[in-house]
View: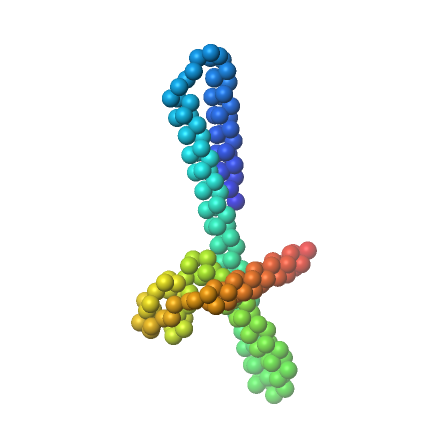
Length: 188
């Protein structure tokens, strides 16, 4: 968020600088600055382009960070559910109590969380222009022919893969929005 604010500050500085140039031009009425007009105009255009690039990159970094935080929160939820599963299983074994319904419910919750985590991780990998190796699950560049870790041959994605990754990106966005909505509900 700070980087975005810096780009706004840069844009304001450029505006002030441009205003000062215009005031100087009008004070020197009748005097043509010639080649300096072009230099100042080029400088303003380049500064605006740089500020725009900084703003775009800041937005990408913010989105990536948001997805990584969501993935971390899901991993924490999975670990919590696994602890709960262990406690339920321990209680069932030590007290000879039938807790199969609670175990099944907890396993279902863990499976759902793992599916959500996989969707978010796919979205993060797509943003980094990477994909998963089907053999070892390592992240590799999308254009790789072989996995850098296990050496397995990778198939290049075609148009159908692009459509599937768009669907996966939509699913990941839904997971992120749902997670944030749950956090907002818990915060209230």
